[in-house]
Length: 306
Length: 315
Image (cartoon, rainbow over all chains, first blue to last red; front, side, top):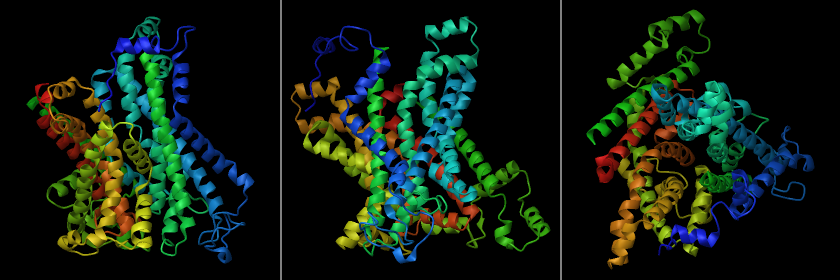
């Protein structure tokens, strides 16, 4: 049964004035933060993400493993006190390898998201401010990029130019900026009619100054929401590239790589080569999605305030 | 309506031209000429140059593009020097199998996701809703190959019910009949799609449930079954039409992964092999076909939505 929504006035009467309690005026960002921290899933997601960052980047300092020299004697040993999650077919410690793979995944995830956000924000802001023919031409370019089969192109370029953390980040970012571009353009279309933009124009602000000082900072909310989804998608893409065998080269490794290596031993029952790594991917991506969903809700609160 | 569809159609053509030029130039920059693959690594530079000239690989890129488009329009998708076969012949062998795998997975995903989303919206915050939401969240965050690995571990190794390799038969009818081999690939592809579809269906159903016409239908004493079927299901399904069009790229990528994981002889596996063997004509043809499919899929979704929803027709 649908929950009966009380009329809006009654809701206000029950929950106090819109925008929080009566008292000192709170900024929209602080409201957003409060909304975010009151979301249980968001806090869990944030904790998981922090855990994985610490696990991947500080973990190797506490848990020393040799990830460069292969060791045939140690190949495919089951988890034990010396190797908490066993070893793979080349004798690498699996837990240490997960940390190393996670470093690559997180680095590429965040860097690719950064590239996508920068391109998309600028593109959307310029299109939205320019309007008219320039706007529609720029948006058709976005349509074209949306139609490019993303994974295929990333794979082709990875095969051609060799996969490194930098190259994969750039390639993934370069093909993932369409959504932020559309979001920012939508925001800019409404922002550019507002009085403060008119005031800035009157004061003689150039278009570039308008974009960087006035439009982008005010459109940041929608961008921030998109960041975590970008990171999540990039981490998934890297895992696909690695799984298909076109990922990072030795001695570097990523989670997808490890999984595709583990498949060869699925029938032998070497579970430690597969399920811990898979769980890492799922948990990291899920944590980022939780954070993204919560950010979207909390930004709604901030925007409602305007 | 005609003018809306006309504009939509023209935009699609522009996008198809744009995306094909872009992909052609990009791949051309990455793999300028297959001469090395044909002549071998011992070939002298002048031999390579002569071969390039003979086969038109030293023309300006845009000339090569028009040449390629002209060939495609005459049914020639290029020639794979690695496989020593025309790309069209390679595609012909495999297209039906890939279409079957993707198609039936999509149908199963819709059959599961639409009722599930409605159920979740109607029984919001119940145990069933929470379980389904959690499952969708996990599946949504899972790379499809990992889901496939879990399914293989459980249903092919721990409990050997199904085969862990897809059907290798050349005949589509044998493939369709071989449930033992095809169940796992189909469900790997379907379940990933169910995750996102059911989430959208849930929120779209909740939007519809809040509408006045649902209240009116209930108030006039319409049985709940009819409220759900006539009013809720039909209206909540409309956004799904657009989502179907938008989900094509994900389906294509899923197809690639699933076919590789289960060794299913479809287009995705062909693309994977072409990546390994650096078979440029196959990569180009498959990527272009994917791009065109995405544009056409979105266009069809928009047309279908216009037919299904009279509110758009009036606009």
